[in-house]
Amino acid sequence: MKQELKFKTNINCMGCVGNVTKALNEAVGADNWSVDIQSPNKRMTVRGEDVDANLVIAAVTKVGFRAEEIEA
Image (cartoon, rainbow, N blue to C red; front, side, top):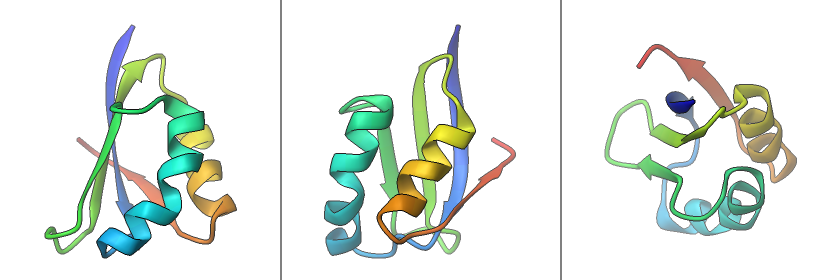
């Protein structure tokens, strides 16, 4: 089932986005995620089939950042 999950992160610049790109691409696929670094909450959106929030959080944490699921 197609889903859209939102996360509050500490990914706050394009350099940070670059650091998490490989991990998130492997976890959820390229073009299935984005980070709004302009948002005060540094909101990350992940879209896909049966997205696992814990997998997303683990991928972000593995490369040294934080992610917390929030209501969409």
